[in-house]
Image (cartoon, rainbow, N blue to C red; front, side):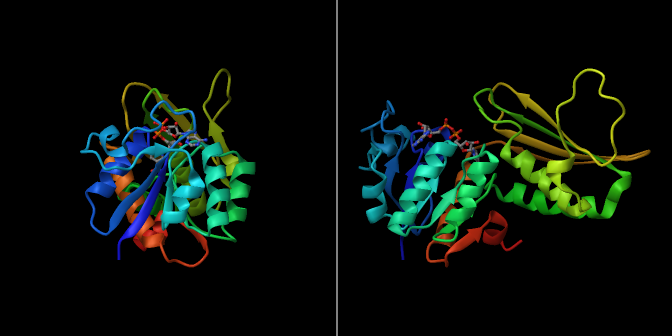
Length: 267
Ligand code: NAD
């Protein structure tokens, strides 16, 4: 059976990578390519836009029309785009793969509410390597325990609009889970001025922005006399796109509920 996919954010960096991933994978078909209604790319062929031969699928903004023919929607946009997509998917009874990051706590609550009505697979990072890293980070934190200070350093391209990255936050959650701490209580987002000595329970985040860095993440465990660093470096957006398409294939036909990439990979 071929799974019919619609992409929201098809004109963006990830959208184009998704068009490539779908074109190179068996068992999936791109049936709709959506973006903002005033996007300059409206009406252009999604294949040509992604550097492929024309596919006969044109950039539009009609979610309802797209969901009438698609089995699953993949969203890589901005939080407002995701919330509109969830409302449309609920109405059409279609599952959604959410790759967008940068949600406020209120927006996260709205997404959690939506999972009562449809199947949702959400991940701050769809790469297989990062999802293995999430597990390693939790395990290492549990084993090393309170004697090691945890700091997370991330770097992304100059166009990224949210910080720290959704992946860095997910790594923070994984470390906090291993240490039985609540990230909300212990996270420190950058330091400046006379900060005083480091409080041992804190988990620090450092954000680097610039150039064309696709996504680097390092979790440091700093102890007395040694430090352990776990690092992932993305060298192409295709790894996120391939993972999101794999998630869409997995999600089509799954019961209503909330899933993560760890579920898709069976981690
Ligand atoms: P981008 O700016 O290149 O593309 C975003 C696209 O979404 C644009 O074409 C824009 O016109 C469209 N868009 C914005 N608001 C919209 C709306 N309300 N309705 C419809 N379309 C809308 O950004 P990008 O680099 O492709 O990243 C997109 C999102 O995906 C970001 O939140 C980024 O952090 C996230 N991301 C997630 C992963 C992951 O693995 N989960 C990987 C990379 C990027």
